[in-house]
Figure 1 (spheres, rainbow, N blue to C red):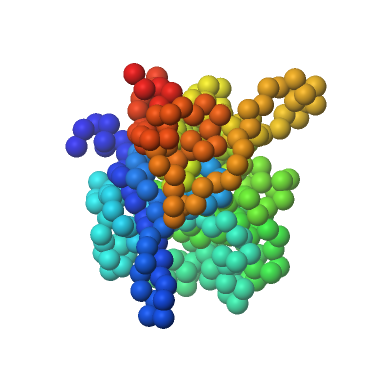
Figure 2 (cartoon, rainbow, N blue to C red):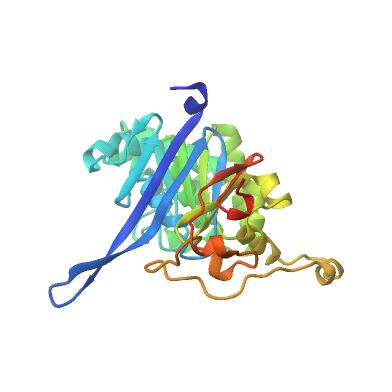
Length: 329
């Protein structure tokens, strides 16, 4: 293993996740939906790599596949130097201590019948890490303090908390096993705007204190710009651009990335009025029946004849990687 590969906590190679489509009286498989269709990226230790794109582009499916909560059709997932692509539930059990998830919905992801102490401590019980009740309660207090919750909240139920507090409970639960990787699946999209910044700042503070690595799924580009080190832009199950945060926001390469950024309004109305817009038109094509060539060409303002016939591949453009014929040599 090279030094560069050793810096990677997660390596995803040509990941494909295809969902079967059934039909007829016997519900036989009559086709497949390529939700994720050839995604490759590396996630370095201690960084935040964000996946962005429109709803249905495959961001969350990619995250679930990395966690091995979603069957993989093809490709390779390497976590901490171990190929876990075809691990079964028993083989994944010790691996799961190193990878946890913070869910989008802070209301639906917590069991309403369990007290906060039991919710946060459930991973400790599942992995037999709580030697006795005293050790268990001490660990719960430590985790609650870590995410900014008071110890006397441990015996309350989820319905007694606000959305932001519930998400802090979810984060504490994810931290219980001291994981290296935390996948955040749109963790602030269901929260009030006033609370979103608090939760994002908490995640960044925890990363600095504990050396965490984040795979961050989002569609809010302002949140992505605040928390990310690198960003991958997905469209129709594929990565179309991978770049550092600053380069992506200051010098986007792919026409789809530029359109996403153009759609974000500027707070100053005078600047917004003068700002040129190059918005994309049309509907997102069907994932089940994607267009030939570049999947973005039916909506791309810069499309040429080659784009309608030949599918582009990710290629280096400066320090970024872009899947676009505009940059063919």
